[in-house]
Length: 87
Ligand SMILES: [Zn+2]
Image: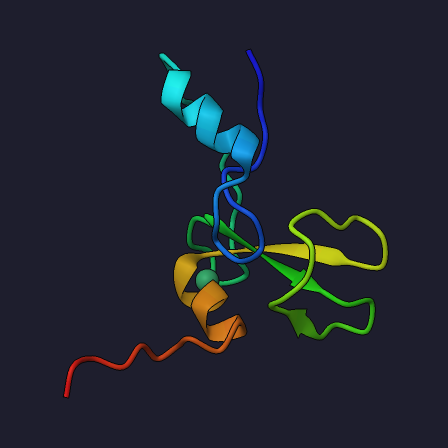
């Protein structure tokens, strides 16, 4: 049994989570709630002054804070929302 984050602050799998998802017989989610009340599935990295960071090392625990958000608010936070459709 093990646990951890599925994706990093960019929404990309960690190497370890990729392997675990591949071999897991059972997955159980630990529910986290976004500020809007929806299920949080993503994480943003913030600098200590609250700016959202979209680049950097995959793992950084110093001088960073992490906030769990739903996909919509995560995409909004990283500047991808609203998503533009085909024109
Ligand atoms: Zn939300």
